[in-house]
Length: 90
Image (tube, rainbow, N blue to C red; front, top):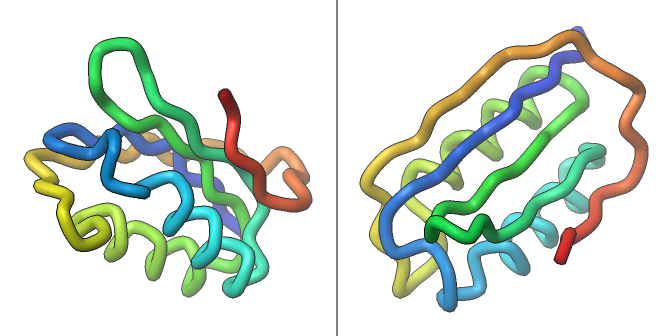
């Protein structure tokens, strides 16, 4: 089943390669979407694809890469929009 999660991650999540690691994992899992830093210090991401892959991305978001400290993860489930490819937004 195809799903789409719009995610906001808070804590020490910028400057710790969060976007890069998320992008690597999303590509390995065959997910579409994007990830970007927000001016308020959070990271925002969209993951779209098979539910199992999206759930694995949410697990990653809850712990982050080494050096990160994740304080919170907000997930908004949306209707899939046909995202293909994963990219880092600037």
